[in-house]
Length: 81
Image 1 (cartoon, rainbow, N blue to C red):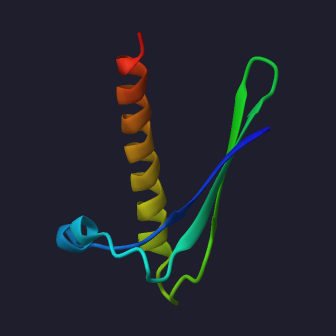
Image 2: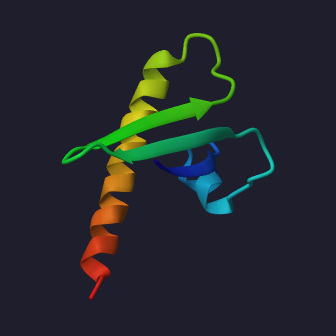
């Protein structure tokens, strides 16, 4: 199994994102990838505090995360020789 692990800092503001203040609270993201004989198994785990009443925003954030990751990987793959 291969794992990708990183931290994620939340913001809804493009200006905050541009400032990249990474000293605040963050979540730990772990993505496990495993070859299962002709298929690939992927597990996404997120560890951190989730404010009460935020599950819908968290779900939307995870979907956005994977959309962005997919776009990055597509661009990376296109850049390979």
